[in-house]
Length: 82
Image (tube, rainbow, N blue to C red):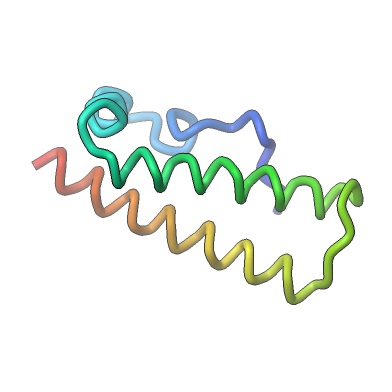
């Protein structure tokens, strides 16, 4: 499944917009994760749409990294909710 590169964290976590804002403003590690997620999503999109060549293994590695980042971000969101 290809994620649209315009899909934002607000789209992925629609019930946590206030928490996302708080984390983006006050949590440097979360901001770094969010930026890395954006970069990975863009890379994956470019590979899946044949804009950028890459092996299947490379694509899978990128997807795994993105998923791990989303898992970590979800944990931080849950913790912030409190």
